[in-house]
Image 1 (cartoon, rainbow, N blue to C red):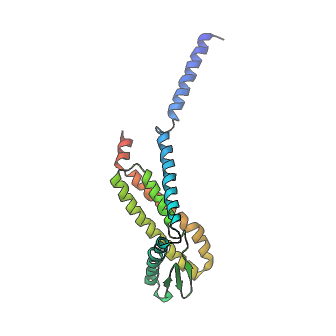
Image 2 (cartoon, rainbow, N blue to C red; image 1 turned 120 degrees about the vertical axis):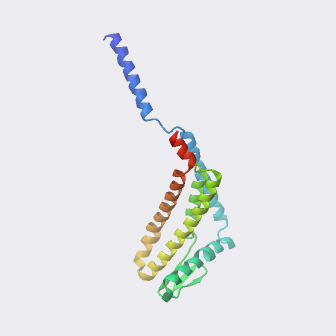
Image 3 (cartoon, helix red, strand yellow; image 1 turned 90 degrees about the horizontal axis):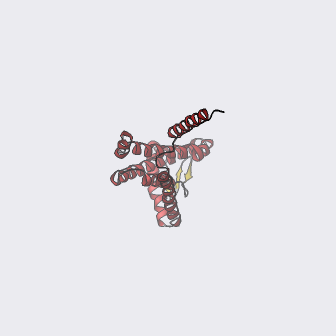
Length: 197
């Protein structure tokens, strides 16, 4: 084999490999992304575990009975006064049936996901606080909508309740929160500057 040809072929292969690596390079800061992911898990875990410590007490009763059940009852009365729905602690009871709002049905897990995502998002502190406030309001509204829908599903056709409770409503809530966080991050001025540079 001609050594000159062999050296030339190696240089071409090396150049091709280098250009391949340039085209398929990992994100500029994979370590930062990993740290954000770990911080997300830490924040979510801390919020979730902190709330678990408060389960069974006055705070949980406030979150479920007052902040979740009472507003849902008001919406149901507005939409369907004939149901004569009443709130009894964590329960919504109407003429055709009712539902119990149990631990985990108050929307806190989704709120904690939102808070953890906002905590690690590349946002200024002012935008982070605004995103958190708007996001918590969104989670509250989505959860109230979910509870109202579950009440009507349980009253109208019990077969609708399980898929709505177990699949449709949770996926809709998480999707709504992911879309909300995505929009805030995409509209971040610092991210727009980084893309432009």
